[in-house]
Length: 158
Image (cartoon, rainbow, N blue to C red):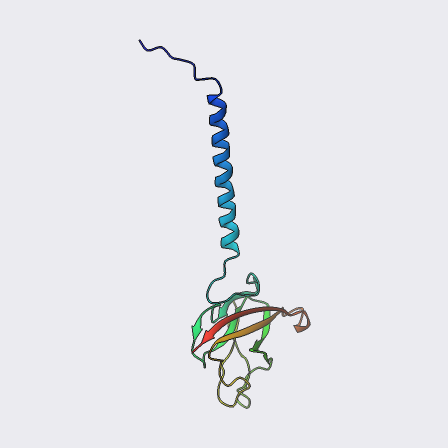
């Protein structure tokens, strides 16, 4: 019959130390991966910050590639409004039949969709054939435009 022997002295302590070091290294790797993923930039460029709860969608998405006459804008949550700055050109007015050079605001079941379409004779005739930057100045409708906060994103046009 085999006799159970005692482990060598210190072997048990070294096993705990080794496992502790491995656990710490794994925790450090997981922590580093979380930091990298949280700070990762998607697309060709970045958004100014984490997209706020007031914006449901950027049009086009950050880093996207669109046509030079493509629409830009934002989908907003209920209770918010915005105006756009397209490559440094501020667009605040709403488009009308008499003046189609403005924002198109479409009411949806979950807020507004605010878009601007460049075109001949408009303040922005076309997007630039490289990197474009749009800034959405967003505010709560109850607070007014003086409280607007910017969210910007970039994309390319061809």
